[in-house]
Amino acid sequence: MPLRNLQQVNYLPVLAISNAEMAALEHLPNARKDTILPLFRLKRWGASHDLANTEQRIHRAYGNRPYIGDVAPATPFNGPRQNVHNQLDALRDPTNGYVNWCQYASQHPAMIPAIQLGDLTQVGLQIQRLEALGRGLAVYIPPQMSARIANIAALLAQHVKNQNELVFVIDLGAVNQTLLLSQATTTSYVNSALAAIPTMSVAVSASSFPQGFVGLVNQVIYERQHFQGVANNTASRLIYSDHGSARAGSQAKGGGKPAPRIDLPERQQWNFFRSNGGSGSIAQQYQQQAANALAAYSTIPVGVWGFDQVRITASGSANAISNPVASTAARINMHLYEQS
Image (tube, rainbow, N blue to C red):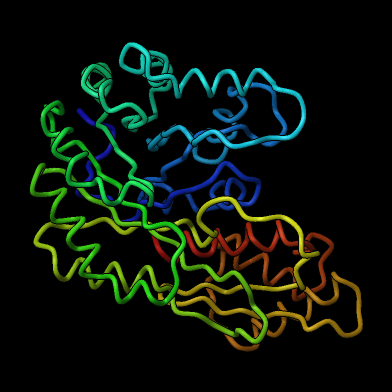
């Protein structure tokens, strides 16, 4: 019996192990947590030295609800190598059918394990072990593997027994409005996957969250429009996915602190209220932008943490949004609420 009935999942956000995204998820209403199925690409939590801290942070944010667990790719890091780096490298090791990853998955009963694709020769034994856990399976296809979707699906079809318990997540990565011109390409990706495994579920993900905000007051959520276009041209039911209104992938550092900004997400677009500098402290600029947001959208939900944070900020409370991490956490929380 799989942990989740995939036919009842309408939203599958790809969430990073970051302060903002974990805070956003933690403060999401429980009823909304019950409806979504997040995918976490496991990595180090903050500056911790042990992968157990990542697991504890997910549990604190999401409780015992089922989630999809994958392993994030290795990235360069500063400072000395810690135990957590060795632990993650062990999970990426394809030896003996990804035996380390399979053992790790077996120890986390709320996790729907993602099939590791680093070494396709080791997929068969890996699937056999993971499917024996009886929780369902996932596979995450990053943007750089899009051209291989048909081949990967055909390979999985040879080994997955309970194919209706598999969710195939196609991530298009960071995109912009030109994504709307690519609906035919994405539809071909989806149909090639379903041709190999017709009974599995397919999720389509992307992130069009902007890189810059000067002069930008709102933006359509292009991945939502793109998804609807693809879904309209696919016979099977698809699951909507995105990056929780965060940007896909790691972001370059530098460039100075961003101007104080309050974001109000709706289901189909983001609305931005950005300070252009001027007088007042950073806290006062956040307060003014929150007041501007409330003046423009006076009927935002009550009792939802992110929206309430905007109200608190507009009131000048000491617990208000006063930095980019707090602003991002509030935005992601509101976005998860709107999309779930």
